[in-house]
Length: 502
Image (cartoon, rainbow, N blue to C red; front, side, top):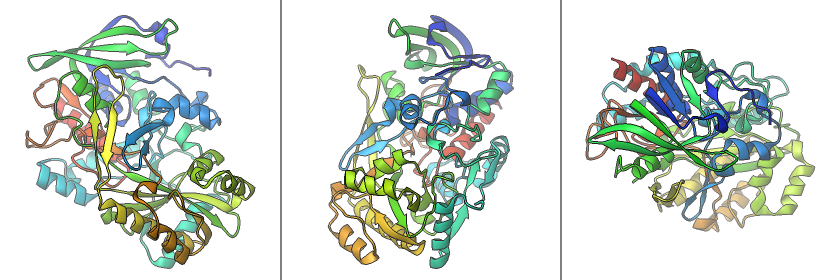
């Protein structure tokens, strides 16, 4: 894979020095870290980013989905939440973080969520009115727009919209950070056209032009601190021919934005916080394959064009997902090779959909000092079982109303269903551990709040007990928001840095 290195981005790990110094060290280049570092650099601060993953600009992306997943995702795309059933969690590990491999959804935080955070968690100044200026700036910078359905494209979303209309359910065109999208349908493995406005395309580029430096392939291993002041990060270089080697970075102020799993892991490894990672909230995604009576050519489209919001206040959303043979094969794997081959034989008649729910289940991040990766354990809340079944029933009703003639459910041991009667029979026999669940959104593992007993971060974004450590990623969101969190993360990061700069 040929890599062209932009100015101020050191992509080759062999070119990293043994030590660095900076005014602000930002750990992580996803949405939270990129916004923070870009604002600091624009204010004239000396900013250094470090990123655990590699640097892969648009020209390095290919249509080889397996290779790109191995390249852009942590642990080659397989990071399990241990529980029954196990949940597959996907996390970006590259310069630009999750913004490189997500669906580019930029929703403003639901007003009722912000109201709860203000009243129950003391987040004064984080209400809808106060954050509006940040959302407006973010949306302009990322060219956020609502992708319309063109003739002959995105028919999977169009069918979903028709079904919602038939049922009189609320739906909306989704706001996405894209510019001149041409429906290549490779959103989760690097946008090969460069249409997706990731952090690499936007905030990091601005930060670099303002003098910020970015060091790729450098994992923060431990933060050195004394008497409530952090002073140094000891990192480990990855991807070096002769093996890992150490790098030391001294700084005046630290911004931690490693993500909802890695941030608590680093805080605990470094003895910066005992309470970080005690509770992790996340979304559950349920993938459903639908066969229609005529071609929908779902590959000719893009992700999440239309969102069904009838049950948004309950934490339930329905959308079309990316459609490629790889994703369909993974979704249908529990049905066996015969079903996969049947899908391939009728490929243009199928589409892939996702139901996203906000569960009551919680996870815990377990940190071992001798392990580079955290262990995530969760316990399925009993109330989530009927919740999942109800969500699948609503999804089935919606898809049949959309013209589907056969559904493949994310439930091991079931057969394809062709009616609601068959669905009811199948779901009634579903065992608790039979659900096929994935997740791509996690949050609230180092929550922000005004009460020191209930929060890891104060309302200024500072890690409790430390004057020079800020946290600006999804871990600080007080609760699960039931929506794609990128916009919220970026708005909170922007507000935190604005307060910090005064």
